[in-house]
Image (cartoon, rainbow, N blue to C red):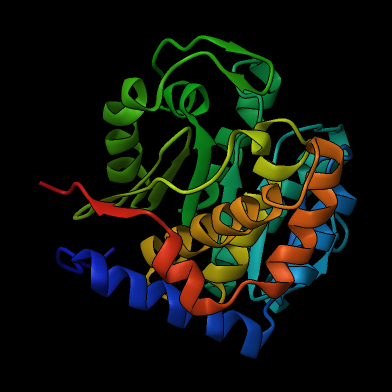
Length: 277
């Protein structure tokens, strides 16, 4: 991954706004190999944001479809033997065709699931690893405290492991938490927008992985792609909370706000900070 140089906040905000405009204009096709709990919600998030979802997760079609897609998501939330095989061949198809792919290693720590994620990584570098702190620690071979898909570690606990993953896989690492941290070999930015109700709805985190793949399909700078996806989802969440009584209404409103939020507002309200130094 070539050095891009340090970004100031105003520049980052502008690049994020431009990426949202590009996403809505180009409507990237995103292949989602994701878990059964979140597939419908993830597809609706992509559609509302401006992308086109394709939930192709069988080993017979996954490699070829990855070659045709603009971005690919590999999410290990509910792996089965066939879908696990499809994840690895989809990663291979993406790498072979230079399609950006995103690894969302949900629940790694259980041995077989962890191996599925590692097998996909061994095929070739993803554009982005999007994960919580415990998942980042686990992928890097460090001790982690997790309860299923929930992180038991802080983002700060995982930063050293995130740097290791960046170096080992030549990719961006995007760590979700109360403040999201996104880093590559040269830069480290944070996104502080969002709301705690994002953790009260099934599928919001997994949908962020899919949205990251969508942005990677239209934005060659994958740190900007990850920051754009995170900010768009988080700013839409803030807007959705304003008109929701609780998590159920919030889930519906989040889809609406992803459709309604303007590119400029995503850039302006993202809550970006450059912490590279």
